[in-house]
Image 1 (cartoon, rainbow, N blue to C red):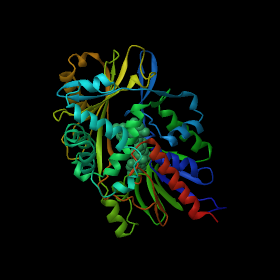
Image 2 (image 1 turned 45 degrees about the vertical axis):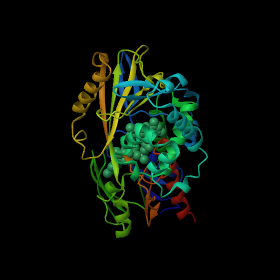
Image 3 (image 1 turned 120 degrees about the vertical axis):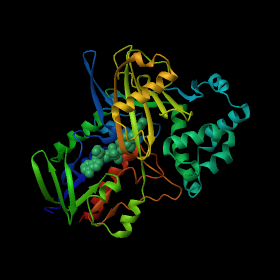
Image 4 (image 1 turned 90 degrees about the horizontal axis):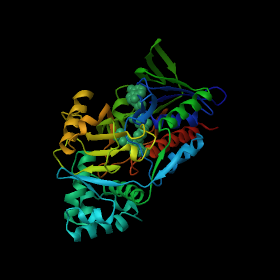
Length: 431
Ligand SMILES: Cc1cc2nc3c(=O)[nH]c(=O)nc-3n(C[C@H](O)[C@H](O)[C@H](O)COP(=O)(O)OP(=O)(O)OC[C@H]3O[C@@H](n4cnc5c(N)ncnc54)[C@H](O)[C@@H]3O)c2cc1C
């Protein structure tokens, strides 16, 4: 350490890593190592030339919910606030191979469910999922909580599918506190408005990267780290093999990936980190030659579909396609064992296209382009007794979506985790 300046390696240039590096680069020497050729991880974007213009479209849908204050603060700090917009969006369900709107009282009345269950559901959304002290739900599973508050029929019709869609496991294994925080945030936003950013989310990623470089930080893409040992990081990039000595390592990658790079962590911590399991996600993005008559957000309740959610992106991100055209995401979470995960991007696009054609005949001919993004560590599974691992051990600092429980995994919690890790470094080393 020279003049109180630390040499810090930040592993991973997703939003957690970018937020941590941005804060730390104001005072310290930062080197960010990212394995991909692009920045932003799950929040990275495609550049799509479309009708003579270039569109930057996130590889996965990215809305900003009520209470995502940190995302909004970053938008403000990066000088992007003029482009921050809010909009009321509609939601729906895919049920028995039909699309059901679920946003207006008439749509809710038309949905095939007994009236008493609709009343219980409304009470659950409007009352029970709010004003909760989520810590009181710790140790309780999501099924117990929903059945007690919204009734078995609502659990079977909606929540069982929604939880399985998200975690590929029964609601008995998932924490009620997690479901509560998620439901509270999403239902309040659906009742109010969703946020979006004109020009796309890539501006946050690029904005942070520009600031880091301005502060003297270095960002290396396509960095292949082979080992982290005794404060030494060994990696190779397009210029060859490098070995750097650092005071601090900030890891923002999934624990299972970090453990492949280092044996410097004690056995008990290693064991704890190894227990954190993730789901993968295959998210397809379709450019369509027409506007698409679907709610912004449709959850799939049918078990026979290969995907679990559809987002009609252009109904929120109005500038994401040429006028009269649209962008639609079709996505599913899955385990690595799922046969879909082991298929190529093209095969997944074809499987999703066929299933969409079955749901909405004529879908295929609307497609102008399609892309699939496979995210290996898309969501940490918050089981009932999930405990966040510690933020640091010796010169290792940990940030990312496996440390944010019971908050939901989104841009805000990733940015917060990056800031938290940066503050911890500052506090530990301030003289
Ligand atoms: C389908 C989907 C939809 C989403 N929708 C929303 C939404 O609507 N709103 C919202 O706010 N958020 C949304 N999110 C969540 C949001 O994108 C994430 O919470 C956030 O981007 C996580 O950032 P991160 O830096 O923690 O992780 P990541 O983005 O995963 O970043 C980790 C980085 O580490 C890199 N890396 C991995 N291994 C190595 C290695 N060995 N060496 C170097 N680098 C490595 C990866 O390439 C990656 O760039 C969504 C995510 C997904 C997948």
